[in-house]
Amino acid sequence: MTTPQALATAGELRGAGLRVTAVRVALLETVRDGDHLGVEAIASGVRDRVGHVSLQAVYDALHALAAAGLIRRLEPAGSPARFEGRVGDNHHHVVCRSCGVVADVDCAVGEAPCLTASDDHGYSIGEAEVIYWGLCPGCATARSS
Image (cartoon, rainbow, N blue to C red; front, top):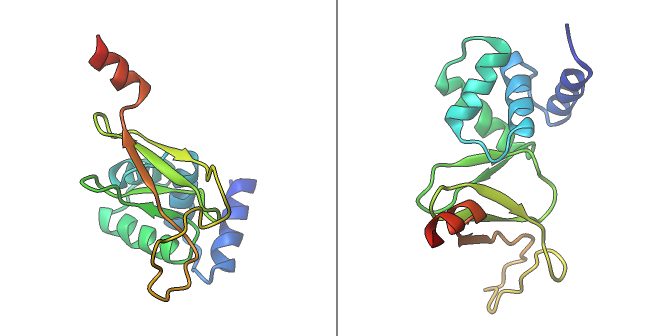
């Protein structure tokens, strides 16, 4: 049975010029239902929805959806890539140095791109990507104990 969410997702895929497949629909839904998921977690979520799918098919679909702007790839230094469904805005992220949990940070000051480069080298800047690093509340509490 096709859900209203799956029909809407299929429409988004078509609108982005992508072929609608069960894997792409399941992947987009998994990323949007998750919270900055890694590839293994996404593959597991897709398998829960559609059955067997190869890791290569997941990577291929992630690449296509990110290139189409339907999902966003986040690559904190020293961490595996994560993916999120929040696109179309200029938000940032905070990453725990201890456990690796990632959270969204809305742009707090100014207009997009939220930061003004001291020297833009002639570029027309449209977005700034900021990653704040620190300890999440749970890890900070554990360290102080």
